[in-house]
Length: 319
Image (cartoon, rainbow, N blue to C red; front, side, top):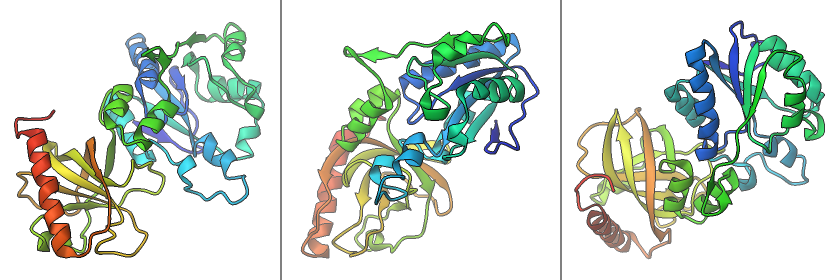
């Protein structure tokens, strides 16, 4: 997959099928868009995802007084790295990460169509949801795309929202589930477990001294995390899945800092994972993070967490 993240790079010579959207979380609705452009590859078109970086909520939200770069409101369901991996594995040919700022966001909607989609991307099929907005003041919409389709010889195809339980699936619904620690609901909307990815780092090895060595990740600041606490989890290490117990938080019993870590005790793993990329999928929220009186009390709680996870898994495979 070729990644285009600047206007200077934005020149695709092949005819394209383009899906436009924020793709935050890549939930079932986004996946419906992806299926359309991937199917178009059978007709000789290149599959292109056109999205924005940073997300519009970040660009415009940070104009608010006092807003911080990674205020929780502006964090993403998937990081830039996670989104790139997902789309590459899906078979996308080009990922356009349109560099969004107050200047580029002010382009007239018609210019988006003529100078970007038509001239720079040779679009022959463009797909989007009914809530599409682009260009100056967000005035560009699907009706405008359709209005210019015949003139510029492309097809505009609107993909309806995916519904479930009488409600539309959206990034907002996924965010709500994650923020409530409802990992099963998040999985329903995403079609897969909510995950955190990263490189295994050397930690303080306190877990090892307590008899429960962990794989330690430092999540990217843009990543939206569920409530701090302990989760039943499964971990992908070099293509193999293992079951585990994951703690997300600041480890208040042994640290007094603000750094957030994702630490996982992995069942039946004997390898050396330092420096490896891993993916931690969060299956169920077990308990909140809390501060204990000392290491002995913490160790006892960890034993209980591990025993609870053993009962949860039964060591019979993924749930």
